[in-house]
Image (cartoon, rainbow, N blue to C red; front, side, top):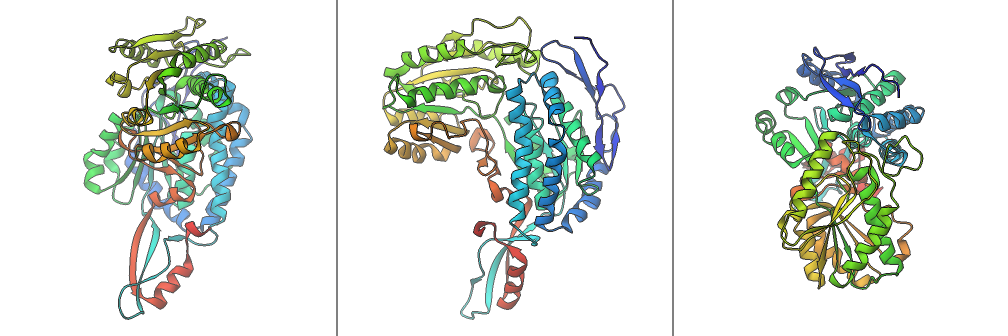
Length: 522
């Protein structure tokens, strides 16, 4: 490949494209190590950028109905769809994505915009939400209360992770824009190239009001120093960074609402009934391999812990080894490659250190390592760790790579206890043809997981997958997963609305109710 000059990425702030005052951080092709882009936010006036979003974008979006904003989302999706091949090419060069990996990110983002465009149209000409009908408060039936959802009076600051520069950007933006809230998006620097070019395509298309969408590349700088009451922050990334955002003096002091989607040691359970050779057993093995190889395991929803009956452990390991041997690791530009590199050599080094830590735990060992991996620094071999349930590190350390640990149980209660030891996760899946076990599992582990996927043979080919986030379903989880909630269809709009109880005379409340829409009745 002939080396090219790095692209100098620009931020889109206060209605114009601007560059940082220094060279900034280097974005690389993880296969070749070539620097493909540079990103800097040095010297940019982030306070002015937030004021512009609030003062220009918020009134422009607030003047529109939900249906009109939904139409904007559809126009954004169309602008992005027209250059889909360009986005795939950037995802390969900057993120090391295979075509399938790029599809999850790029098409997932566009699909989420289209979903909310259609869903938002059902909200019609209203500009506020209602939550239920008026409720009587006193003996006098004229005195009642109505719960309304009024859009917050500020900007949405979205700080995203490196693994989904498209989907992470648009899944957050879709909900905020539909709510009437302008977006200031901060993609992770390492893979910001795709985010920048997608936003540029939308701005060039002229489909959004001025101030509705802003983009900051490079360091977050002093952005959080300028937030105020009425703003909202949605963050995806590490638990440590999430805590720094929550505890930031201005964020805390101004009472800014914060949604965090953080670390997650997701688990998958194999039911006691699933024997080797049965369809549900094969579905289980296929799902683990898919989750290990998709995006090279760099997904917040990826399977990190496989919990299997003790009597099935060896059979599961044999089946996983056979399936993983068929995974082709290499340069995603090469035909037939199904697993590419991690996003950078630095992330790969951290992953290898994590594998060593897991394997060094008492009673743990490496049960499988893929035999054919390129020598490039960013490549990490798909790896299986066998660990005892008492190896605490298995439930504490997330290795963001194609790595999973296999643990065993003897009773369902023991399996549920192991799943809960993750301390709160985004998703857990259960594979079984025993309907009673599936139902029991959902209730036993639902409190510690944001999503529970139950799979039997009947829906094996129809189910969308352990790691796939559907816009109609909630995304987020309790505990170490951050305690946040995103998407979930129209439920996601409530983060950008203040639910307020309006008390007063019934005729006035009925007038307000007529101007609002109840998302739960659509």
